[in-house]
Length: 270
Image (cartoon, rainbow, N blue to C red; front, side):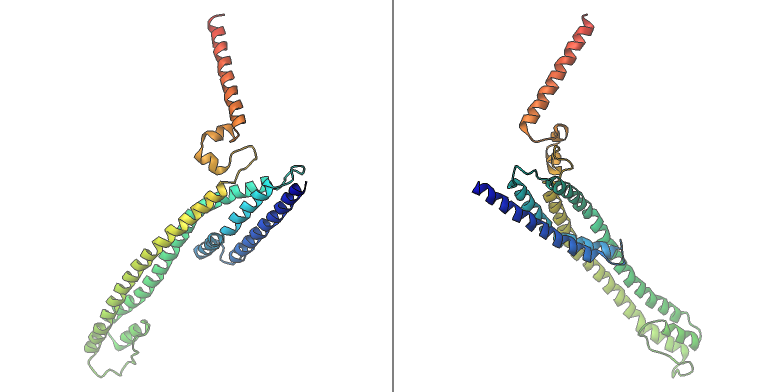
């Protein structure tokens, strides 16, 4: 009796320890998710990072709750375990789906950053073209004004002929533009090289988290867990790992086959 009481007491403590860990995880994820940029790629990547970074909390909570259910007093039915199993089932599916979702969001952010840098480079390129085709000092001044960081020119203050000043500006700005384009290409390639290891690591983290939840996740108590159904497809038909139930199912199928055979013989040989 004392041992049984202590087991129930330990189970009670483990259960609420799991609830506390799960609550901390949910609050942390919600604090990250409650922003105005809902479904934005940056929002998706941030929420995915929060889900992935704290995934050990719900996994440990799940383990504690399962141990608590094992230690639970058999005279008092355990009502929360089916709910925990269903939550684990949907958590497993969520982490499986998180792999392509976070990959898409990361790609969108990389493309967006590269596009912003390309847009800045196009400003310099268009300004250089305006300088190249300028015919008056006013046009040249406007072209210089459109280039960030370029020297300013007040019309009527040229100390050299207009064509010479224009060529001098082209010779000064054009190499800078080529250098910026080369640096941008190199930076973009390096950014993608650095992103791939992180994306692969995140995908495997999500995969292992999904497997952890799938090991305990099921929709109904009589069905196998999601991982059991994936590893042992025949369990989807039998619906259980219990060898006694499997034996009964096999015996039932055998009896049905014999009945069908007997019926066929009756039809052929009345």
